[in-house]
Image 1 (cartoon, rainbow, N blue to C red):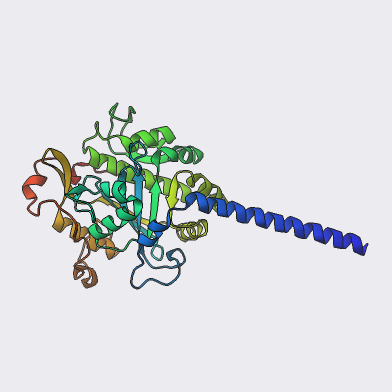
Image 2: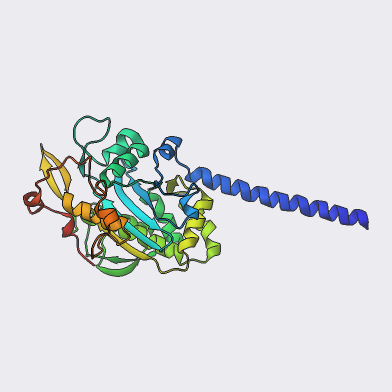
Amino acid sequence: MRNAIISVAVVLTVLIGAVALAGALYIRNLDNRLSIGKDVRQSLQKPDDADTGSEATSEKPFYMMLVGSDARSGNENGRSDSLMLARVDPGSHRLDIVSIPRDMQVNIEGVDGVQKINAAYSYGGAALAISTVSEFAGVPISHYVEVNFANMTGLVDHLGGITVNVPESFSGGNSGLSLKAGEQTLNGEQMLGFTRERYQVQGGDFSRTQAQQLVLLAIMQKIMAQPKTALPGLIQELAGAVSTDMNVSSILQLALKFYGQQPQVQSAICPSYAFDQDGVSYVGVEYDEWRDMMQRVDAGMGPQGVGDIPAVQSSNAELGAAANAASPHDYAALKNQSLNSDDIVVQ
């Protein structure tokens, strides 16, 4: 009898060990699929007052950069199709997202001549894109997420679609998709077409930027509405479309801080306008408006927040300074001559 008990104990120990090992290998595999290069990790910055541990375990706000890469481009790195800067505040359950137009005219460190901000990804990959956006916004970027919208179709279908309030109706265009304005459930294919449309919408590329914001927020909201037990499986789906410096454990910890809450969410586009220079189409920043927006974002007021900006932010010369911007400082007339960030259809 004693030998039988010992044998059963040994078998159970082996089984438990095998399950634990399989779980560890599964997590490691997901981490490897999500992982980005060492050079990108080294380019990320921690706020001066940040805890020594991961922001995922902290209640303090931090900045995260979200990039949609253009997989259809022909060069090695491609160009970033969309750039979003998110201020994540786990303690206040607040998320603010500001999109920076991909054609923003800037100077890129180590690159001759004026460039479009999305060219930073092409010249130096994610690391150069991070440092360029950080200088433009005047904030340290602690985390990085690269999204391939084309690979997100499976996740959207896995979620049973996402609910989006489409700002305006459109038909055909570069996406080949037709959608009616209003709240509706989009499947993966519709989601992709929505994020690519810029010809048959009122604000052109500004409207496409708005669509990408709406889609990412809708995906986040749908994920947060799933049972906690579904989160590991959803992360596995995400791993096929996302690359990030965060590991599975950190993503889960951060997600659980927002899970079951009613987070405050605001999104906006960097105040900007389209203009031509030497036969090239660029986007210029509205310097005063951008500085005001970033000061409000950093203060936790949201990009569209109202009221007085706290002294800590209003006296910070780096916030929204657009130090590497190359567009004209006298921009009032240019703004009124072409499309600008105010031309999107407001929901």
